[in-house]
Amino acid sequence: MTDDQLLRYSRHLMLDEIGIEGQQRLLDARVLVVGAGGLGSPVALYLASAGVGHITLVDHDSVSLTNLQRQIAHDMASLNRAKVASAARRMLALNPDIFVRPIEQRADAALLDTELPRVDVVVDCTDNFATRQLVNAACVRHGKPLVSGAAIGFDGQVSVYAPHQGGPCYACLFAPSSGHEDVACATMGVFAPLVGIIGCTQAAEVLKLLIPTGQPLLGQLLMLDARQMAWSRIALQRDPHCEVCGSESPP
Image (tube, rainbow, N blue to C red):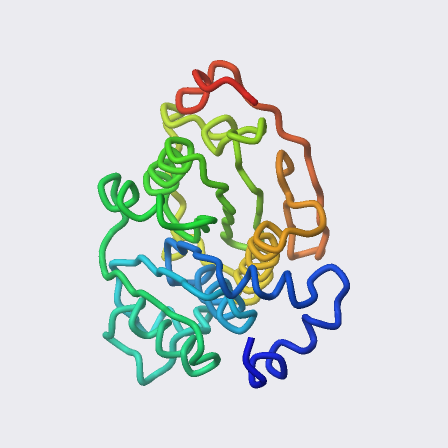
């Protein structure tokens, strides 16, 4: 690390659980963030500020005025710009030492199969069921841990899915064939700080996996009711008949 990096990350270096070795792991790490909206904004900004060295952002959407109520990576100057370009600009303004790779494209199986072998952790910050299933299936295929978050209305949830480590995958909890219907912010609304709370929690789980330290939310679903600011947690079990990971044998 350079002298400037030692100063920039000094508050991390003071933590026994991180120190120079842990911070160097972050600088060497590669993370794929799918979605640069409400959840992706705090995830991207905190991963950048924490010094994750290589961050790839995937999103096909552009910034609209309705996004600015909660998507803090964007501002008025970003209207009609690609979200990945807008977020990358803010990330590099925070930390010019990192590398940010924006991909203005909808995440599909082909893109994910190209990108996942290059990264250490995948973060699902999307807002639709079909893309969540695609990201989960790709993580199962490539043996990558998936940090997944969701937020709508006043309710949010976070978990870490890693069936290659013996835990469940996203599809163990939400089967692809369940007939699940998406609930969009455009019709249901979302409490502005909720996506910040859930996104920051996702960023924390990513850093814990990369350092590594603490106990990530493997096999745990953390849920928030922001009306009461009440957290609850349930243990998740792997489904041996899961459509996605059921044929995989736990280590």
